[in-house]
Amino acid sequence: MTDFISLIRDVPDWPEPGIVFKDITPLLAHPEGLAWAVDRLYEPFVGHHIDQVVGIESRGFIFGTAVARALGAGFIPVRKPGKLPRATLRRDYTLEYGSDAVEMHSDAVRPGDRVLLVDDVLATGGTMAASCELVNDAGGELIGCAVLIRLSALDGVERVPVAVHTVLDA
Image (cartoon, rainbow, N blue to C red; front, side):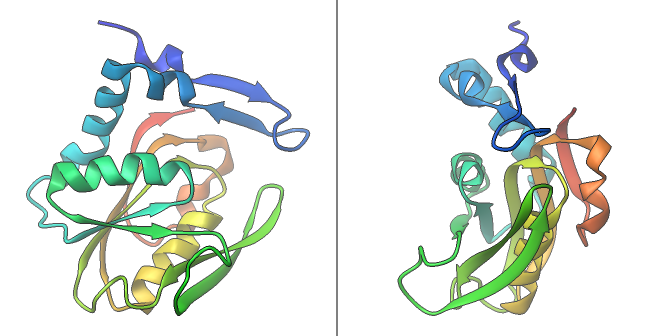
């Protein structure tokens, strides 16, 4: 079996000095590595009757759509401001190198939808916490969050209001 973890590269000082970026593109380019990652993300949620998978821009789209397909659920994108063409819900947040906001179409999650949130990396937790708030604002029932990599030194999981399933700790 291939060591899929070795396919994730550290890129120091990107996008800002002091940040170590987790480059997952070699993992994505490896067919078995991609399948391994997707399987590890969705397996704990089989049988939880997920209606919608919410993926966070941008690498959460890659995993979120595959997880949604595997679970027989729909997919909803959470995007950076100004990227969605209709009425949106918006949440501001802070991250390790500044601040930003996320938006979701205001009618994307229906009240009572069972939602799984998916992203590639959990760092400070700002993006994920803001995305959880969007789901709650829309009336969805947040079942959990799934991330490929958790940067454990940043304690971002403490900001997330539901259980976070992590494939890898870094």
